[in-house]
Length: 186
Image (cartoon, rainbow, N blue to C red; front, side, top):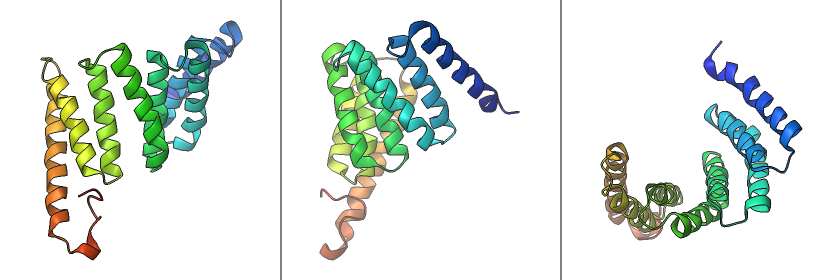
């Protein structure tokens, strides 16, 4: 039995215990919903993870407010689920909200804010908005460069920028009626 298969009943059991002892409307219960949803997300069971992410977000918003870091995490998780499902336009407002809260509470130069910029850059690439994708990833890079332990992120972000620039070059080679294959915004 794979480890993921062994983990699923444990995540479910933890959620059941949290609901039983703390109640449905508790921040720790919201975290358990997120954890179970992340398990499903990791195993590519997006349809099962989506409602759990939604519940976690609603609990966080109700108990902690729209502008709380845990609510930002729930917004981010729901957005990444939508992105994994190919529902890019549905994902965008949740990532925008997560970024807004990260900047407000953690600051413009916090590594988690960089991660929010990076997630939004990835989504903009999916939406073929290359200029925004590059802009947001460059913001993430600027933040990560201030910290010595984000080398892996910097390497991936640098590759992302090169890919975006390549897409932009490819886009410029097409005639007018074929534009938009890689970038809709140039």
